[in-house]
Length: 589
Image (cartoon, rainbow, N blue to C red; front, side):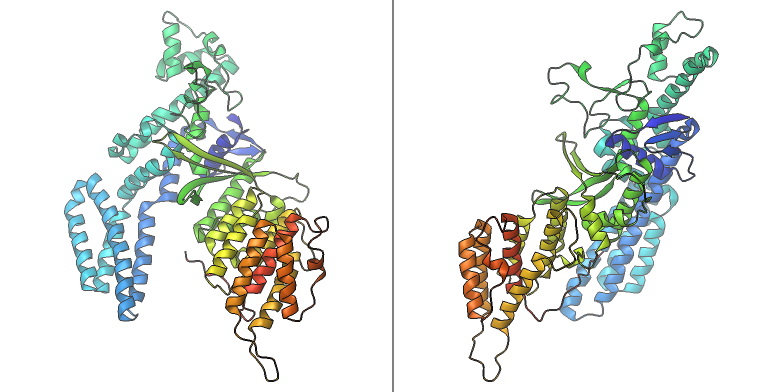
């Protein structure tokens, strides 16, 4: 039994991965201390590979893609000719590329299937060309059956996982080298055992021998092992006839896991995101400056991506996959639960904001439990450039809790487009002001002549919520009041003329022009221009001006933050179509 104290998030990611593989619940835990049986670690290669195949099966993934495309293809056949042709080509191209990618890999690693692969590809392309769905279904079923054969699925899944998941953190290790892709499934298990597990098991058993002063067992271990520590001991004790533990007493301590020996330099080949390199510890060329870690710490770091959740995020102007991890200090099991819920929700709708809420929503907390702090870590490694983008954010639990407990008042699904919603959530997690994001989205909606501004109102309500420390107000918020005021002005100018009323020409364009003027005043913080324009609008509509507007020019009564809320909410209400009912967004999976 080895005790592993988890103190930092990179090792917490690895611990989460281990707990996910522990289906028999053999690992015991208390807060951030794990008790792992040595026998469990010895069986880790088989556990790991089974977990990879069951979780990331390429056969299952391609089956899902092909069946979904086939279903949509059949729907296209029932549509009008022009739309039918366009949709049919789009979904048939997905089928052809998915089948080709999978079957060509089968032929590459399993040459005996070359003829069958060639025939299947030809038949599928012919069926698509002839638009015979019955035959296409038959051939796709045969392709899926081939791709899901256990030996084939194991090979293709393992190669993809190594290249796309483990390689992002694992650095330059033999196991991840592309030349090892030709090895069989059992040969890859044996390689992982030799490179990663045998050195760990040797150290753990040697530590046990030292603790028990069992020289006989220690001597046997050293003589039978080819691990680097055993080889080094034999070099230093060539003439020894019995065990001498003095060499092991001189080994430094692991910088990551208490009680383990630091036998490896913490370099990029161990863990690329945060390891030592020429830009930090080696700036003066002295490699001895690097921290040292144990073989066990190395395993946790290598497995760390398996404890994370992968999703798309805008980085600059490009959308890229990043690794996200919710770290709860001092609680390994709660960390696992939170990340499991996070991953499960993301797998359903692919939306970061919804997944983050679900990760809190599905966790039942003990009533008197101490308040825990959740840190969101996002990272992506560019292996060729040897660069890592890393961001830490303390999750605002008050903000998330309000979203969970008041879904009607703060419904993120009413904020769209989705890209705007996701940006709002990320900015809110950074505890940053979302004013600039809301301003740009409001300008876009006015430019596009959109009639739906309820998403802007919801975003402003969330902004108010954050500024209030997550406290919900019983009465209407400032956003609600200003939005409603703008709507009432809009209704006056856009409602149909009734008999006896003075004639009012269509004012949509006039309102848009006024909104641009108000928006520029709001952006520049020009309260005088904003107040004058709002006052003229109220006079034109024969409406009394509200108390909030009368105190607008007083900087002590109305802060800059409140002015931004008032102005943006009023503009959104002014441009919204009063008759439009609230929409609910349909998220396509």
